Amino acid sequence: MGETFARYGLTGEPGTEQFWQAARSPVSAPDGGGWMTLFLWRGGPATLSFESLPEPVPLARWGETDCWYAEVAMPARLRVTYRILTGDGAHADPLNPVGAGGERSIAATPDVPGQPYWPAIGPDDVLPLPEIRLRWTSALLGGRRTVRVHPAGGGGPLVLLLDGDDWLYLHPAMTAFDAAVADGAVPPVTLVFLPARDREHEYACRPELWRAVRDELLPLIAGGGVPADPGRLVAAGQSLGGLSALYAALEFPGLLAGVACQSGSFWWAPGAEDRTDPLDGLPGGAIAARLERDRPDLSGLRVAFDVGEHERRMLPHCERVERLTEQAGAAVRVSRSPSGHDRAGWRGALLRDVAWTLG
Image 1 (spheres, rainbow, N blue to C red):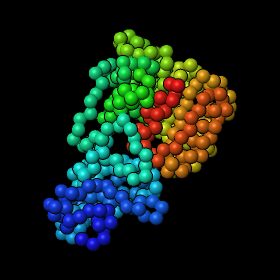
Image 2: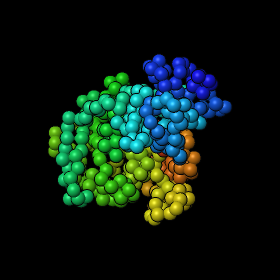
Image 3: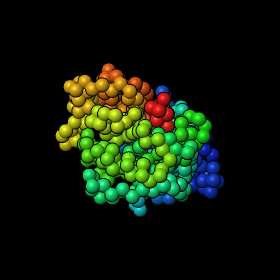
C-alpha cells in the first residue's frame, strides 16, 4: 500500500472491502509543528470545502479504485467544519461520527481540548427540538418568525441565541446545555433560539432588531407562560451576531445583563462590507469608535469575549474592543479557542461563556 496511508495507521489495500471496513476519516499524523490530516471518500470525484480554511482541496483517486483521498496540512490546535462536494451536492463525511447537520462534519487535530457536553451527531441523526414554539409577528421588523424556547434545568435567566436556527439544526445546543446544566457547569437557563432573516442587515449595528426584542419578543415570552427569569437577559452571538450583541448593550443600557461574544465582527463600520478587504479599516470599527467617543458606563455588564487562535486578522479588531469594554467598567473575560472563524470552535466557548456571564 505504500506510505501514503500507512503513516495514518490504516491497513489493507485501498478500495477493498477490508480497507473500507476499517477506514476512518479524518485521521492525523504529526508533521513538523502541526499535523497532516488524511480525508477519505468512497465514490467518485469530490472536493473538500472548509468553513475556515481559505481554499477547497480536490480529492485524488487511488489508482482505479473507488477510494478518493486528500492530505491536508493543518496547524497545531485546530477544529474545523468541512463538507464533501460532489456533482450531486454537499455531503457530510460518512466515515466521521462527528457531524454538524446533514451536510457538514467536524475535524479536530489530536491536540485540541475536548468539547464536553456536545454529543457526536451523525449526518442521518435528527436533532431534538424544543417543545415550546412561539410565533412572533413583528410590527417593527416585519414578517413572522418561529422562535423556539427551551427551559434547561427547569428554566432561569433568558439566554438569547442569535442565529438560532444554526444552534437548532447544525449544532445541538439544546442537548449540550441540558447536559451542562445537569452536570452543574451551567446554571439553569431558558434558551431562546432567535432565527435571523437577513443577518447582514439585522446584525449590522441597527437598533430595530433590539427594539423589537425589547418591546415585542420579551413580552411575548413573558405572556406565554414560559418558565424563565425575564429580569436577566444574556445575548450570545458569533461573528456579526457577536457585534450585534455588544451593540445592544451600548444602544439599550440595562437591556442585557451579559454578552457572550465569539469572534465578534468588530471590523464592521458603515460601508466596510463594500470594501475589497472589509478588515483593513481602523481596529475595532464602529464599536471601538463609539466606546471612545461616548465613554459609556458599562458597570454591571458582564462580557465574555472569545476569538479563534487562527483568526489572526481579527485579533487587532477584537483586542481593541475587549480593552475599551473593560475600560468602560464592564466585567470582561477574554479567551482564545483552537479554531478559525468557525462555529465548530464557537460552540466550545458558548457554554463556558454563558455560564460566566451569569456569574
